[in-house]
Length: 254
View 1 (spheres, rainbow, N blue to C red):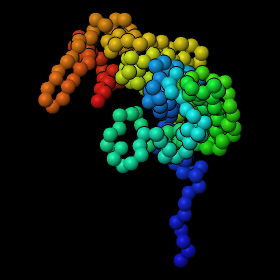
View 2 (cartoon, one colour):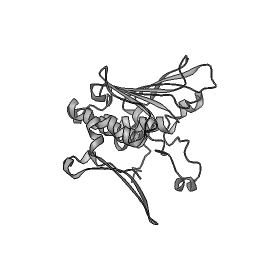
View 3 (cartoon, rainbow, N blue to C red):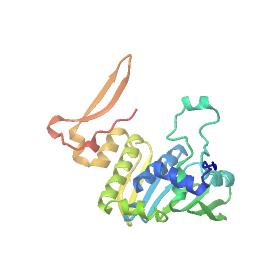
View 4 (cartoon, rainbow, N blue to C red):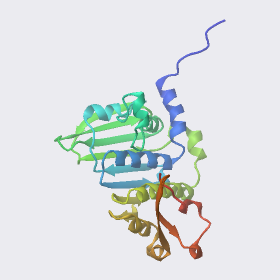
């Protein structure tokens, strides 16, 4: 009987991995925002067009990457987070698998511009469907700008599965809220189709909640602080009289 097991080509494996990592534009937003935070950014800008179907771009002022790291970041299982199996039990970052950029680059047109503070020039890499189109030296500010264009361009069935722009934008905003609420000490800005949606300066937790959900939210908040031998809880809850049946307003961070 002939052998039937074979290794998948890299581009096929990447597309399969992409199905696990990237379900919709909001998935890309989540991965890129978390990468920016792990890179030590103080200010992060999110730019989307057509609910992320045409463009998702995240610009940060973090550490940036060297030429070698910029290229390796798009390889599968390439990560700066772990070296040994023991590292898996000591993670304090947003991610570690090294799948995100490889998966995103497999199903979109991606442009990365990055520069470390000590370097005079940066690196620009353009990838389409896992294939590197160009790698050049460019003038760039410190940090990283990553643009994801034409999501699912090579998987039409997945693109057709996406919901309306209103629904996909709602998912993106929900992800933006979760990340911004968890990191009030960082500045966040979001643009959609050229219009500013959020401009969140560095603040404390209460002010971040108010900046996101509106000034009237402040009077509705009740601080919660409980420290026991088992766990410590701190945060804010809404007064009962202002309660709404909106699941996305219940956000927990561990």
